[in-house]
Every structure is written in structure tokens, then in C-alpha cells.
Length: 400
Image (cartoon, rainbow, N blue to C red):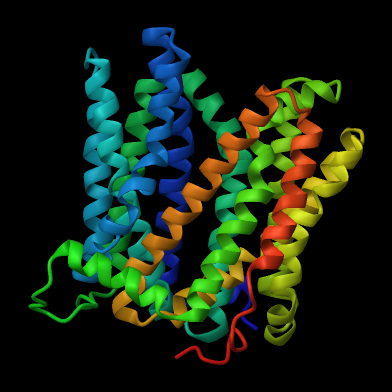
């Protein structure tokens, strides 16, 4: 089993990982900067939310189509091109005096380049890291993202307060440029995954990607399990503040409620990628998916804050089954379909979580207590996970 230290013995991974860290930290700071910039100019929470939503809405509606470019074009070129495009567009958002509607349009345009970038990076990783090293590398990337979530927003608030939103956005643009330079210097050129001169157009190739996934029972089962479990297990995040208030806390308690699943996810990802054997990992994937939702059901008893935090840590630990399963998913997909497969997977994940967030918020608005909503999310999620049938073959057995 590969250690995290051994991963950095692979030259291409070092450059990919460094680029990921840079751009992710820049994004976290920019998320705070955008909210501050828009709210300061308009005093409108709605417009601030619309701008903030630019980080995920493009992936929902354009992910599967835009991710097709990760198969149509050389993936190194896609990574570099997306970084340069995002750097330019984010830098334009920081231009003083820019009309607000133009700034929001530019934000959405910048985030349109995220789906092909994420798809290209995911598709190239199995070519950079062999065997179990890929499982560990995928786990380290997810752990890094979770750590970024835990500390990024705090650091972002400090940085934005110190230098202001405009300079913070320019800093984010610089991180994209640096990421592009690292990829250009450290990643080997590979030809496009799709055969050169393929007669099909973009939409036809996107449709082929959907058909490829739907034709494979294991891939369908994998996506259904991930989408269902993640939607229900993370739904309580949408009601963290009202939940904290009912528990006698305030913003600090809400922060703990949001951080608890991240802590569990981090611990679970480490166990799955560094502690257990591949055989044990395979046996634990489905029980972990069940844990991600089942752990929330005791919230129906309205326990106090310490118990709720423990439940959320357990749910996050269970949800970490996504980390190794994602790696197996990508390796199982034929190389020429990997970009499109990741586009479909990511978009479905965003849609499922977005709908679950809305449902949780609507349920509290309708009069249910946050504890009841969290517990019902766990109960319904457990039932949904149990309805997802098992894959027809062992998870690792038919990987090419």
C-alpha cells in the first residue's frame, strides 16, 4: 500500500498536487471576497447569494457537456487552458468600477471552466499514479480539499479583511496562473483520448458518455450509491445555523456543526486509503455508505450539541466511502470516456446535494425542528441506500 510520502516520488503528481493546493486556496479566499464585494456594493443578500452560487451552478447545468472537452482535447492542454481562462476572467472581476451585473456574468463564465478542468485532472490521475498509488493519491487530494474547507474560509476572512476583496480576487487569479505554469512544466503531453478526426460533434459525444455509463450496471450502481448517500448525509449542512440556535448556541456552534462532518470525512478517508487492505476496503464500502445516513437518525431524539457533533463526525466518516469508490470508478471507465464520466458524476452530485439542501431548508421553514429534519434525512437516506442494489460483480474484479 502506497504511503502519502511515496506519492511525491512521482514527478507529475508533485506538480498536479501543488497546482491543486494553490488554486483551491485561492478559490476559498475568492469565495469570501466575492460575497464581501457584492454585499458591500449592493447591501443585497440575494445578489450576494447569486454571485456565491456561481461556484457550483455552472457545474450543475454545463458539467456533462463541458467535461467532454477533457476527452476531445489533450488533457494537459485542457488543464492549462482552463487555468489561464479563469485567471483572466477573475482578474477582470476585480477591475474597479465594473458594473455589478458584468462582474457576476464574468464569475459565472470563469466557473464554466471548472468542470472540464476537474474532469481532465481526474482522467489523467490514473495515468500519473499506478495501482494502489492512485487510490492513495486520490485520497490525499480529497483530504486536501476537506482541509481547505475547514481552514480556507477562516483564512479567507482574515485575508479579505486585511487586503480587501479586490486584491484577494487578484490573488486568486495569480494562483491560477501559477497552477498553469506548474502543469506546463511538470505534466507530460498526451494525445487526446478520443480518436483524432472523430466525426461526432460535442453534443453527440456527450450523449455517448451518458450511454456508456448507463450501459454498465456497476457504473450505474456506483453513481446511484454516491448520489443518494451524499445528498442525505450532507443535507443538515443547509440548516446548521438554525440547528445551532435550537441547541442553545450561535455562529460558533454553527461552525462546529459544519466542521464536524469534515473531520469525520478526513479520518475516514485516511482509514480507507492508508490503513485497511484493498480487500477490507471493498467489504467496508457499502457499510460505510449506510453509516453516512444511519448515523443521523438518533437526531430524532433531540440530543444535545456534543452528541449531535459526534453523530455528524460518524456521518462524515461514513461518507468518506466516496473517496476510494471514486478512484475505482475512474479506473473502471475506459480512458476515452473518463472526462465525460466525471462530468456526469460531478453534476449528479451537485444536483442531489443542492436539492437536499433546499428540501432541508424548506422543511424547517414549514415548521419541523432542525433535529427532526436531520433525523429524517438519516432515516430516509438509509432507506434510499438500502434500495440501491449491489453491484453485480466485486468492485475491483472487472477493472481494466
